[in-house]
Image (cartoon, rainbow, N blue to C red; front, side, top):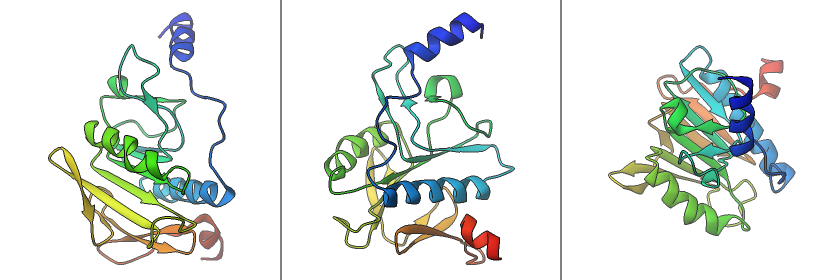
Length: 190
C-alpha cells in the first residue's frame, strides 16, 4: 500500500471516533484484563485479540462499523491494528465480548446481537461487571444456524476455556486442566 493510499484508507476508515473507551472504570478494567488475559493465552498462535477498535464489515461503506469491547480473531497475523476490516483480513471475529451496562443493554441485546449473528461471530458474551441487568453478570451465546442460543455451562468452545465471574472480572480456566489463566496482578505474585 502506498503512503497516499494508506492516508486515503485511514481517512475513509478512521481508527477513532473521539468517544470514551468505556462507560466506567469498572467496565474499562474488565475490558483491559479480558484483552490481556486472552492475548497472553493466544500468544504464539495465528490469532489476534483486539479491544475497542472499529470492526468494518462492508467495504466501501465506512459508516457500517462497530467497536466490540474485545474480539478474538483466528487465522490472522497476530498483533494490533488501528482498525479491523473483514474484507482485508479474510476472517470474521470468532468471539466477541461486550462489557455491558444498563445504558448499553438495549443496543447489546438487539442491534449488536443481530449484527454479530449476521457476521457469523461464533460466540457472543455479555459481561455486566456491576450486575445492573444480568443477574449472574455473564451471559454467553453460541451461533447455531443463523441465530444465537444461550450457553448454559460457561464453556467457550471457540477458546477452549470455561468462563466464570469473580467480582467485577471474567475469569478464564483451561478445559483440560482447570488451570486458571492469571491476570497480570496474579502473575506478579505467582
